[in-house]
Structure formats: structure tokens, C-alpha cells
Image (cartoon, rainbow, N blue to C red):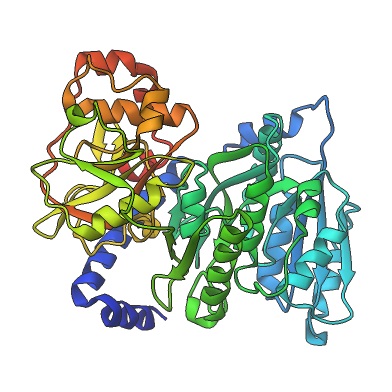
Length: 492
């Protein structure tokens, strides 16, 4: 299995890319193990969670499509639900297994728990049909999705219930992938706060997700024609319609990696790529967005979205000080010290024409090394992926799709003049290199996204960021927070 993956990487990007992937994998594995060993739920915490009383009862229905699952894996899934510290749950099992897996029904009966609803389906209806059948059994206000061979942490529903109290109608959490020892994860996905651009590029939300059943019903549930990417398609539709989306930055879901799972090898279900592209293109069409999606290769469920038209409307300037007097709506600022090619202008122009984008920046590279791929809040601000090889995929493939960041540096970026005017212009009291960072913070506070486009690469050098006292004072609250998009567990 690992050999097949290595061969694919060499074929697509060469032996150097494989070496980089191995080094990064070890780095992220180390970060994952550090988290796992330092974030264990103590018995006293478990007891406190079990004792907690709630003024408003909220039932969470855990919906599981079942099909020919290994007895050991199924038992561990069941036990993880039965061990939840939040007790107002319901487990809904729709079983499409063949006759030789009749032990599944017996295992359910042996639980002797009235909160479990089990239905043996007349025939296997596929992942979409079985999933919808499981939801049909549910009468809880919220639905949580669980695969029949995966494992919840004991506090998963407790944390979901806390998030429900914020008014969220779509909730998602971090997750760990494991193959042998659940306490020694292969990798943990430390997710960003919600970003529709991240979600278009990759189903980064995946597990664990929970949402109002009424929201699920309103978008039509799981859809035929999206097998393999049915979760991505559903999550896109749910997030399009959710009033409040809430991210819990804790690992509450353990995704089992084994020989028959996509988590192990996408080549087991190659159609996932096709249906993933279909899901994103369908999403763009629903929102009347002029754009199209394609996969970055035949073996990775990561997507590049190309939006609308290129640089026909953008004005190019070299410095923020040249901003005054410009009448164009779309402006690209490219420092004189940075080499910018035409494709960079076209890429940035496509993104800045999106109504929800405030700023979009290019990745700065030099001598085959990344200089800056956006800015990360960490003891001030640092450059994301500084000194990584340009062949790097980044953490969880973030260097393969446009994604949200906290801010971009004063190198190459596109911005809308109307938005700059809307927030009162650039802050003239700040040093030149801090003005765009300040603008990014202000625009994000107004609800606009800040994007890095890894397909827009410009050549130059990015110096370390030494923030002025004026900037530190103005943004002391934000700088004291953890970065919402590039997590401290990776950059800490």
C-alpha cells in the first residue's frame, strides 16, 4: 500500500517530492503524537461531564450506515457510543449487510439499550441509500454522522452539545486517523475555522460533523450520483444554508485506516475523485458562481477551482502609496523587488472578483524555497511555510488549493478599492509593510475572506516580520489569540 503511494508520487512529481513528503509526514506525525499524549481525558473530567445537567434537552441522533463491517471494528464503534459522557443520544443503524454478517444484529441486541434503533435493510442500497435510511430512523433535533468502523472519543457528544448552545446549526471537529493503536494516531487533522474556499479545494471538514435534522431535510439529504464524495456534497449544501457554522478545535473522532478504506488508499475507490469534482461544480452552479473545478491529479481528492475571467479589469501598481487616485475597482499591488509573471496577475484577478474575498495574495518563492505563503499569528506574525521546498504539498495539501489565511504580506496581492474605501482607507500611521496586514485584519472583521492562491507564485525574498509598537497595540487582542487557519499544533 505504501509502496503504491510512493510510486504514484514519484510518477507525478519525482523522487525529490517523495523525499519531501516523507520528511513532512514525519514532522506532522510528531505533532500528532504530541497532541495525543498531552490531551488525554482524565477520569475526573469524565465524571464531571456525566454529572452535568441541562436546562434544555437536546437529543443527538448518531446515524451509521452499516455494511459488511468487521466484528471487532463494529464492536469498538458501538462501545465508543455507549461510553459517551453526554447521555441524551440515539444510535440509528441502517444495515445493508449480506447474510454472512448476521452477527451485527446480534451484537446490537446484546447491548440492551433502548437508545439504539436498528433496521435490517431488505438489500444494500449503497452508501447514499444506507445513510439516508439511517437518518430516517432518527428523531433527534441534531444529527451526527459516524462510519461503522470508526470511533468517537468519550467527550464527543458532550462537546457537540456545548456547541449547540451557541446557536450553531452546523458543527464540525478535528479528527485523528489511526491504523493499529488508537492512542498512537498516524496523523491528526488540525482543521481551520470555517472557510468555503478551503471546502471547495478539499473536504477538510469530513469527520465529525453534526447538524440540525431540519437543515439536513431542507437540503434533500444524501444524493445519488455522489458515491465516494457523498459527505463532501452534503457538507457543501449544508454550509450553503447554515445560519451559524461552529468549529470545535478538538480531536473528537478517530478515523480507522485499514485495507478497505479510502483513508488508507484512494485507489480503492477511484470514482471518489470524479464525484468530488461533480460535488464542487454542482455547488458553484447552485450559487451562480462563474467557475469550474478539476482535480489536481487522478489520485488525490483535492481540487483547483478556476473562477471567471482573468486580468481584464485589474490595475497593477507597485506600492500602496500609489493607491490614491486609482479609479479601478480591482487593484494588484506588486512590490518592485518581486518578479511577477502574467499568470500570477490572471490568478489573483480571478479571486479578487469574488464578492466575498477581501484580499488574495501570491506565494513568494526564491531558490526553490517558499518565502511566504501568507502570515500566521504566532508570537506576533510569521511567514507560513517559510523555507519549505516549493514541491511541498503543505499540511493536509493546503499548498495544492486556494485557502484562507489570517493575513498576507506586502509583496504581491490583489484588493478591491471599494472595500478599502469602505473601511476608511489604509492606516497612514503604520509602517508601509504593516498597512496591508492591518487591512487584512480589518476586512476579515467585516466578514471578508483573506486568501492565498498557491497557483500564483512570484519570485522574491520575504524578510522576517518585526511589528511596530503601534501595530502591536492596535491589534493586541488578535495577536494574543491562536491563529484560526494555520493551527498552533502545527506551527507551535
